[in-house]
Image 1 (tube, rainbow, N blue to C red):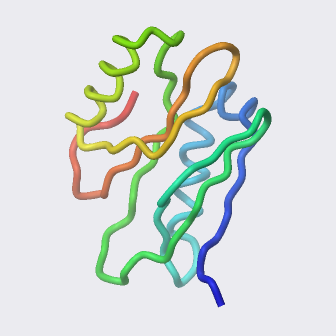
Image 2: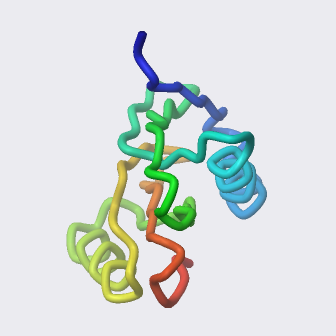
Length: 116
């Protein structure tokens, strides 16, 4: 039996309230006895689908943040990814909302900084 869980969020909800949707994902990751981490993301025109895998018991919680990147300017996209990387975040995936590029970033709780 697979231990992968799929968690979906409406893209419109993320664009309206990225902080609230980020916190919803973070609460989901620590809910119950089997803590999870986001290992991937896919999107269609309406939803993002997060792959949630079981985390080892000794590992700390993962912190996730949805953030708007740019209006598709390649330099802005690269700069946004690099700035978040320098703050300890990795890029899980991206999606379009309202003609702008958004992404989900994650870091282990032991990291420093925050995605904006």
